[in-house]
Length: 538
Ligand code: CA
Image 1 (cartoon, rainbow, N blue to C red):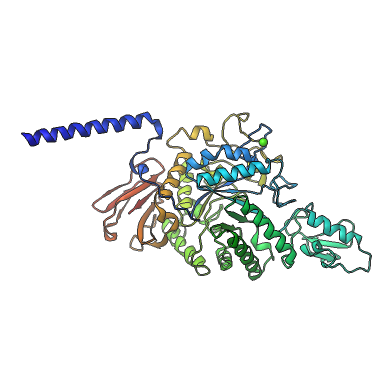
Image 2: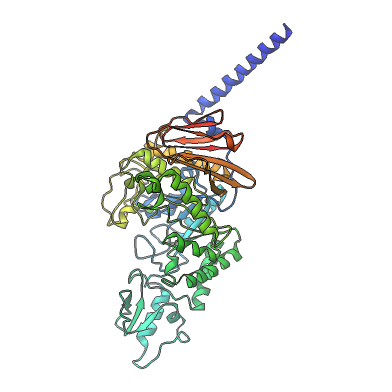
């Protein structure tokens, strides 16, 4: 009797606790996390992060002039942090003649269109306070022709008599660029004013290439790096690294070793990611420089592995092939640097937006997010991808205004690049998607949460589970710091799948994603995955 009473008391107590918990949950409204989402997030302060790439001019306008600005980024830090990002890459913010600002006029200033240096200080401090690492685009390959260095060199050349030999000893800035008397005959050379001299501009006449042979130039660039590191940036995104010496990998690796060595001597924890837009066998070689990361072009773009896995048929584009490529890329980059940090991304500012590759099919857009963000390394997401924005054709279209609101006149909305063609977004604006549990936005948030809850996802060494033979299943393990997790991706658009995981030990579901909201369940060691789903087992 006494026992029964005790049990009854316990049941009543439990019911009370449940009632209180439910009350708290309902009081929190839709923000209460339940199921796997309630698990703890383990944040490790290292360089395996989830990064948000921002084109400042199209992001958020704080003062109503239609131009996105640094204060706008500050006011959206809550949005970025709430999605789970702990890194931000700002595309160029320095004074420039172009809307994209990849032609720098002054490496130690802020373009007035974006705000002031005080705004930047404020942004850097706010990011540091939140544990968000802030990196900025550093364009070393070329300057603007309006940079003081180029102006000095041009004036010097104009001052020479017909028989004078130019020399860097007379004008150090002459040595900062590649000049030639007479046109060397290639498309990439342009006349200096009305002189007999020509300069190299691999990208355009508005982007004269610098000459890394000049030690004075290197000293000046070191001062630039010091300046920004002192400002509180956590590192740099290096533009166009394979054009430093176009076509000469070993020379480019030497330049990168110098940059990396200098930056790390100032801040050993700084993070550097380089843009070597090339195939895997080439960008893998660049890891020999010691630079932490290079963007993983193998997986990105309309013809990359992620798009192929979702859009193409056949064994070569299967889920299993995706798993094989994860291992192949990892091994290829580790051949050049054992602690290489891969930098996976799906699209960036130079590529058409992902939704267009997938005919604006929300299920595929969501699955693409999982295939990108759950990769090992430092994962990058271009602003607007989290709401499936549209953007294709000319570059300006790929950098369209962040679609915060359906009302183009709403607070914060930017005008976008002047020559942009109107882009028709097929999915709802951020404001709407944030309220919907089944939106692309909410899916992105879940993907990043799953990544943040399981440190092995970003940091683990990948191996393929060869015993799982189904072509529609990518079956992998990730091992980090003595712990192994297992991940299964069902990349079938239509079929539920079952995978027997008993041979891998006593596992439990740590979390899962499914594009239709269906559950992943495990019974007697067999996992049942709805179509287009991913599960993490540990
Ligand atoms: Ca503005």
